[in-house]
Length: 140
Image (cartoon, rainbow, N blue to C red; front, side):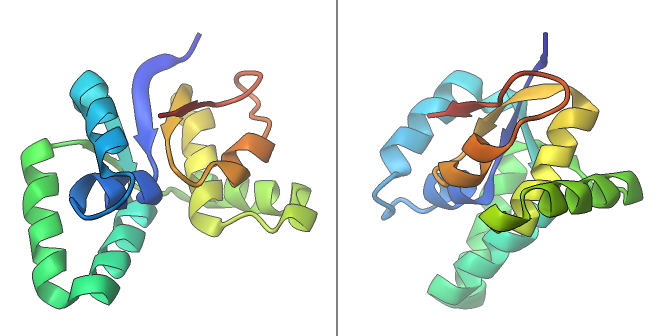
């Protein structure tokens, strides 16, 4: 049985913090249900900041940081062991060309025994077969 925390992927975070995003309403529903349980990988955080910078420049990044700080998710850094495992995952699924950030999150899921991921980019997480459970439950 996995822990109650939920990994928040960059696609989910971007939709949640961007009210103009077509998936924003679905992201808000999940946050209302599970908001205190979110774990955010430092690499996902970097990816979201990049997306906001691309879409709205520094003001959008600052607004994202302000809102994330209010949300107070658990921040998880990528360790050397996580990088090693992410590399193994990328090599195992090399034909699928899995995203590096997703592979780091997959490594986090195994190390932290987390079985749920909030994401709108379901492909990579659907392909992956973790070592600590049969599959990752994808929300929403």
